[in-house]
Length: 101
Image (cartoon, rainbow, N blue to C red):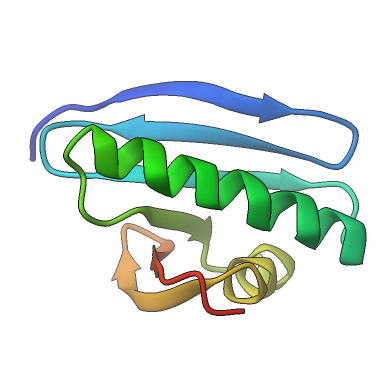
C-alpha cells in the first residue's frame, strides 16, 4: 500500500479530526469526540460539506472516514453526520461520505 500524508484539520473543545491522503484517497479520522450534541452535528455537517468540495476540487471523487472498530460513540457519530459504512480494514470501520443524515 502506498504511504500517505496526515495532518490535523480541527482540534477544539468538542472533537478533533485528522486528514489523511495519498494518490488514491482522502480520509477523515475522528479519533476523539469530547461532546456529542445537535450543535456539534450541525457544525460537523457544514465542515464536511466544505471538506467534500475541497477534496473533489483536488480530484478525490470520494471522501472517506475511519473510526476505531471498538469505539461505538465515534461510529455512531460517523453515521449521523452523513457517512455510510463501506467495510472494515486494520481495526477501523471505513465509511464514505454521502451527506445523507
